[in-house]
Image (cartoon, rainbow, N blue to C red; front, side, top):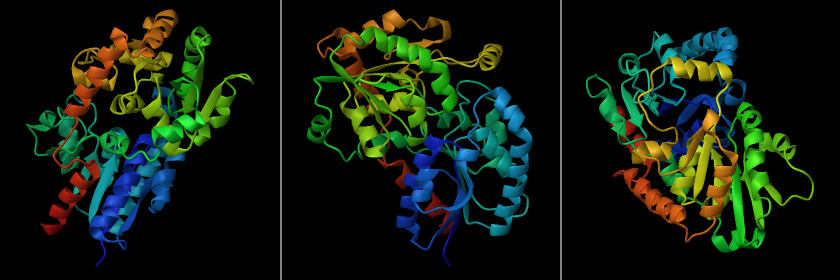
Length: 379
């Protein structure tokens, strides 16, 4: 009897993880495995039976989430009933913890192993969430080595499977010679302003102000992004500027590997630059309401960038809200372009350190997860 597996993601980073995981699941359990769930374009390309699209659900910020609450709650109710009727052999939800814990809690009829891939940031804020997740899920697949200990006092099996970006960072298919042939300029600077339209709008002025301070450089400006953001980003730049918007997945990753320096939005892409040894600095601005709520909650972390959180110190210059300094940031990017500068060399050593911290025994997060699922099937 072919296995039935429900897989759900909520945003582009989860879609990338899910697509890679789908390939591993079919390799392990056979091409006739029925995999259904909420998906994005990458999971659809990987052959999932789509029950919903992340393009209709990817909502960011307190106010938009509140406005969409009735729609999301109805979706959760309908989806839970549909999962109960399917009677899957395994459920795995990816990131979006607030949405997925409610979905799993809503299921009433069918009981099967349930796992969450990507722990909520209980190590940063709202630590009591571990209790709720321990009731809803059987396993927590952690992508950072320090996360598993957060669940030590619960019944939840927390397993470090390695960060998905570690494997993906070394699956690049475009070599340096091919990359340099397409972008022959002596140096290039990457602009990575986020994966959500609201982030692009909010960070536009900062990115363009820093770029303007560096326009005297003889460089190519590379903008790796998703195809749905092309038109919005094309509106940022004037005709004649040496700017290349890159939407092809393989070329996006190649740009991050062979980039001389990068300015990025805080988030997963910052860590992806570290894993590809691309020197960079990071910034972020919250919406006013989100920034107010951020100040009201007590955070237990000293840094915003994932690389700095892992290192336990600031190894990647990071700027948040009022601390964003266009002149200083442009000067630091200038230093990173020089491989002999102290900042460049310090960052290079730190990136190697962080890559070592993220290694796991299985070497591949998807392999680690499928092995655990196989054990669950075997009882």
